[in-house]
Amino acid sequence: MGQSLLAVWALTTLALAGCATTPYAAGDAAARQGRYAEAVSHYQKALVGDPDRIDALVGLGIARYKLGALAEAIDALERAVAHAPEEARARFYLGLSYLRKGDLDRADAHLTAFVNLKPERRLAAQVDRTLNLIRAKPLPEETRVFAAASLENEAELVQEASEAWRALEYERYNRWYYPYYPGSFYGPGCYWIGSRLRCF
Image: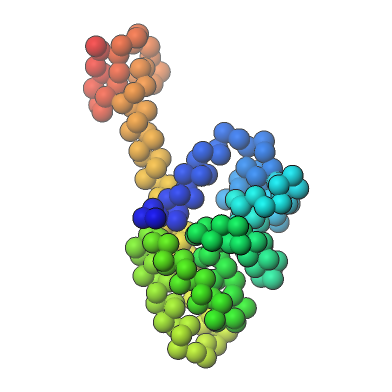
């Protein structure tokens, strides 16, 4: 499973971009804008018809984590992992939740499982450094909170970079295959390739 956790996350988000009317997509949109309480409400609606829907459980767990509701976050994320043990985002945020709660053994187990899923290289290296801290117990609360926040920031940077790359690739694809130059009509068989108009 060599794909980056956050690249997969970005692909999922792009695939759902056109489905903004579903409760899950509304929750995802709210979470991406930092409206976590609203996101929780939408994810809960998505789970009414399908209580074991993995993406909604993970989204709910992450939104609750962001709100500081660690016990509720752990509940949703543990349910997700029970059905999908290789769900990387669930493993990551479970590790962070247990780390912030001070349950270092469970934090170690979930972050180790996350690293074994082969996430992006820099994020994996930072998780490894955090695991070394965890294993050097005891770990003061301030250090636990700082370590969790640092991991979360790194994950968000990786996600942003992945989304920017995907947007660039999408733009390149459209430039190659879209049969019109923006703002003008060149007729069938004409394609804007790179910076030149080609007609075949």
